Length: 299
Image (cartoon, rainbow, N blue to C red; front, top):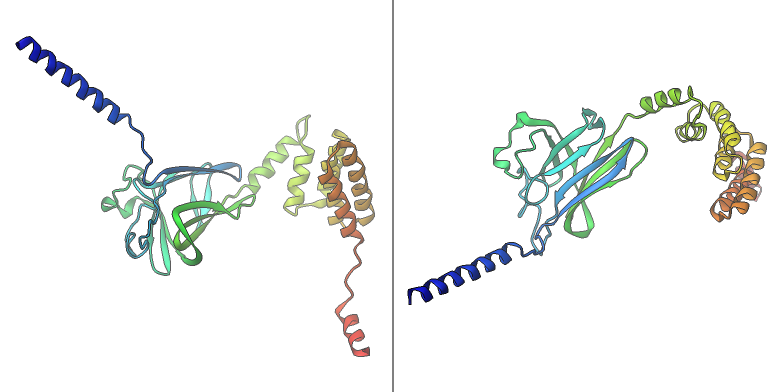
């Protein structure tokens, strides 16, 4: 009898252990799922890790997220933001690295805080001002659309600037990030031009995009044409540089070559670009305002 009792008890324990094991391995959707956002920016990238709560019919700012109180900027742990290189935010230098992003939402403005202590996490009750890297205030905007799930985006991206945008419910705030990459790129160009395999096309492109010395850009793009004689994209850059130098005849000649080369290469996009460049150059100039006024008076 005792043997049977022991056997039943052992069977029950095994079954209970099996239930517990299965329960522990059960995967269910997170109420505030995490997201990792990676964005190539300047010469590196920006990475943002955060949890995304949803409104679910609740009043968000001023209720669920109180006004003028420190918020972890999401659910669960604090939002983390990583800069792959030195940047500037609110005219202050931020070294490459990872920071916690805390905010203090208000009715018409928010305080943005970058925090050096990543161990604090979501426990804002232990927030210490001395661990702040910086704090600054940005205006908040009311938007027409309702954003159900808290969202962080990186928007308005250019070569050295971008906006980090926080949106939830009918509220949106943003702040700008800027990277001073021009000096680094100019040094890299100088170094690269002292090597045998010189990146003429990339150097000419940077000079063109950033309105630097167009005469130097033309020298480099001509070298790039020699390197890649069938590259219609190089010839297109040559036409654009010539147009910036007000050499319209040369710009038309180069654009005409783009069309022929792109047709041979089967690229209709560059055929269209070449045609648009020629049309732009040959477009009649608008009459001076004085001439227009005289015509009106005659009528």
